[in-house]
Length: 112
Image (cartoon, rainbow, N blue to C red):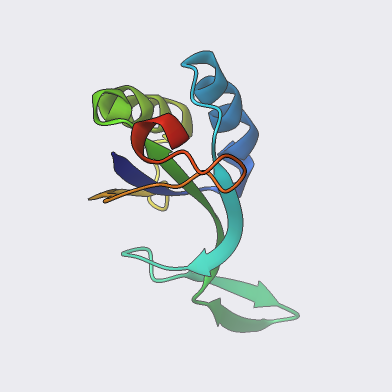
């Protein structure tokens, strides 16, 4: 099993959720986060003064999936969240040792 963490633009969340449902990926945890990457924030002007916003709002998706579904889920997120502009986000993939469904006590792939 793998954990997929995707950091995307907030305005892309609904499109990504819909696309994930279409590829039968229903389990997702969504968190509103702030961060920065190469973009290093933005500079805006307000009443003649420039100020820097170095932590931008992003949306974090956390998905646990079976190994055979990783490419399908990642490709779906990339295709849906991509704008081609700096700040589109990143996807991190890591291994998951075990999963336990609290309600039933099921473990492993059955719990996903």
